[in-house]
Length: 562
Ligand code: MAN
Image (cartoon, rainbow, N blue to C red):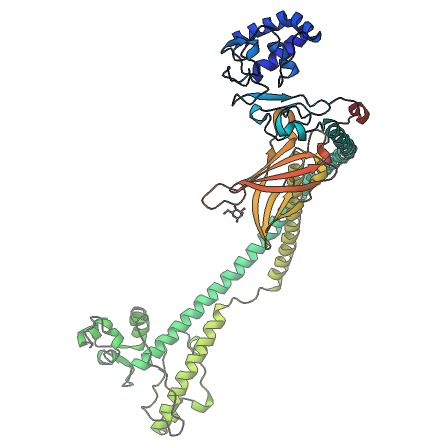
């Protein structure tokens, strides 16, 4: 009796939200009423209609009734008299007089339940034992169907238990597989770490070899480049000299082997004050303050100061259908300002026999000479272009340097290979460590759904769940991320019943998309529902044997009374 009172007491306390002091009084009343209850059993006080067995003690006083919320005490005759006396409606459990009253159906053989007392005698069968319809139409039409419902329920429960038991067996398999897989992964991780350490050593050794091979290669290449740059310098100097000579020839229009200030005046690029003409003072200033300079002075003193400005006359095509005309070709000076005359000749373009400018040719017709001069300019221009191009390209390395490059190339190749092997191993280790860090359940049972995806269609969308990886929505082939694996999110006592996927694609004017997956026990792994309860917040439902946690004796349940 003590145990009965205690358990019922706490239940009632919360069920009716009764103040604690009132509760103590009720408790006292319950004890006092024990005798009365016994007498009820003897048929002395009848339990009012609509009162549950557990509430019976509160209705057992043969004289009076105290509302369950303590708001009033009334004569017992006013119970179920179709007039509402208690604020909580507790005096009218079996009529529809109180708007907040509750009618209790015992539903023997099925599940007892409460219905709002307003539904009593409304003509609609709410209780399977038909106890809510005892007057009027309902009394005639409602029959007790609790026994059949109870049978169906028992059958349903039995099937569910059988399913859960089968699921449990599958789960046992999952546990075994999961643990094996975890062992395999740990073993692979150990092996990879060993290989990674070796690869790191190989990489370090190959780096030493590479550095050793690259040092002589670098020295040889640098030496080669230095020689080439020196040669290039000399060539450029010679070219500059030649250009200076050509400029002198072009400027010396009266062929007196001097460039005079009036000859400078013909080159408008020297118009330093940009007034459209070059005064004799401007021209003399360009010649260093003198009236004229010879070739040597021009090359050494004047050319360096004017070469960036100086413009050669454009090369003109010789007329095709008539004899060329023009002034006689300018003589190439006899005495170049070089100590070594051969050196000069070597860097002057070789003249073709066709337009040799020997002194004898000066007897030729003036037009012919003009023609030859034009040809020579053309030739010079093209040759200079070609030479410049060639000079810009460094000549190939000699055999010895080439051999050093090959050795260094090989060393680099071996280092790169060692380096990428090391990186590959690092990546594999990182991946496997990530996998091992995932919580696959207390017994690794959820490993069975790792590394695979489950899909379902809902209207225009296909939803995909790749457990421990991502959640996706797709439409016409375009995928939208609904979140990446975050963590288990179930309540403390059922942590593995809910998963969270977060940080999916941002929702326009809203949060990042996210998914909650509710899991339950089922015979197969199946995504069977996908909804969007709030914009861009998705809820999936997934069944899996991994969550079939218990094995129940079906027969034991079969005999459990409802
Ligand atoms: C897409 C889908 C929907 C979502 C809207 C939000 O159409 O991802 O699920 O509600 O975007 O704009």
